[in-house]
Image (cartoon, rainbow, N blue to C red; front, side, top):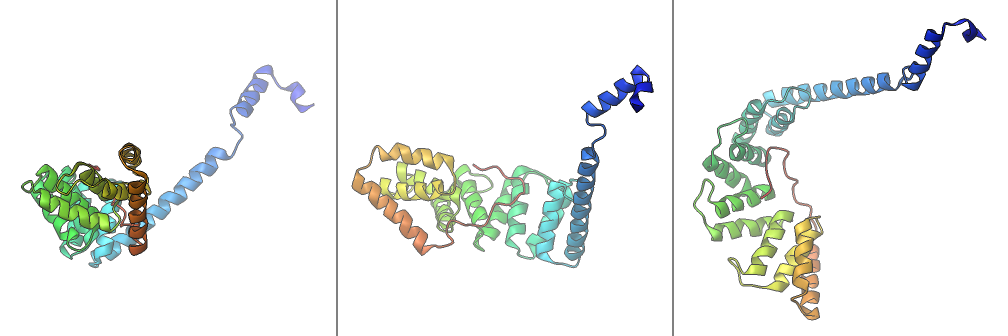
Length: 250
């Protein structure tokens, strides 16, 4: 055999190479895939930037997200804030919401709750569900605005009606405890059911807890209300997804 004349050390090197996968094309293939992905991300960034520089508000918001996430470019929260602001100034709801999240987090800009609330309000008034929820939270925690439970309830209600899962859970909690609204376990059951359907774990836990305090008829009524909500709001539980901009669910 050919290997019969090889020195023992050479045989050892060949064996180690085979065991470690040194002759495999796996690592090279993976590197090529990553290179193609990086090239695609860079191309997407360049195309988005070109549109953004031409004044496209949607592209400006998207460019801000790319800078924030470091996709196709280096991560740059300050640049993200600048592009979100350009989009927001043109009245784009996502840009307004995203800019608000940066001001609330102090990411890429100086932390400023008042400006965060201001941008959340602009987006909320356009029907942006995540902004409505965030604005409600600002009123609850008195961030950038004076504490106002009535305003918080108003914006929570709007977000919940549009299918925001966290707002639906919050409405369930309010009806369960009677915070700002009459205590109503049936209504709480409805909202918890809707939120649980969107995988809010705490909502499912809350449902189990209040079931023990409700009659069969009350539970049936709660389920009926949840079903009616779904029929009346066919897109009610597919609310606008929350932006990737910095944000912590409260």
